[in-house]
Image 1 (cartoon, rainbow, N blue to C red):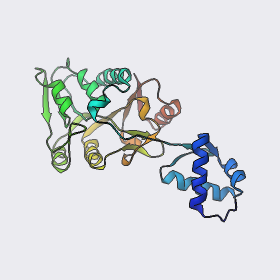
Image 2: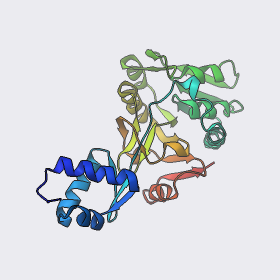
Image 3: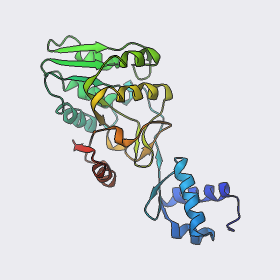
Length: 257
């Protein structure tokens, strides 16, 4: 193929080849498409900027797109063992007497279930399942944020929720994300919820992100924040080792459940 072939068509063919192989080097692309290294690198940078590939030293690797998220009640059985262990590990990071924010999602819900024995704890949340899990416990004060109910997630989002978030501060935020990628950071699949989650990130002295291995090296539709927005990442032992090492190099604490 000539270097002068229109770039979008060449990029489409590069992406097709990447999908089959999983990884491509600049040298392979130069040889396969008879183009210069500079042109090959420009094509790869373009694919990376579109979220279609992840740039690595000497080439690219395929990026797995996160599938559409099922409603929370249908997700409870997904990676149930891993989520249970992650929830226990995340709860161990919460001390008696603290004020914490718990976001929505099944892994955060597992964390909530493991906080029932804490003393003098204040929990702020926009999640109905979290409210139900902690309601009526004498030593826990539960503060609910209102707003528009997202029925599939059973969580409150939107302008009213964000206005309430602006009025509170917590010791720790514990939340999840649909995808985590070295190239594209934290991503979600629903824009309006993402705007609320950005407001949540601002209220915590420490941000703890909880996610099982299936979320790692995945990219979803809406950018939430860079990886550096979290202080601690709690995951399971199946999470990609290179991803974990990259987080540690960014001084992000990693807890393996």
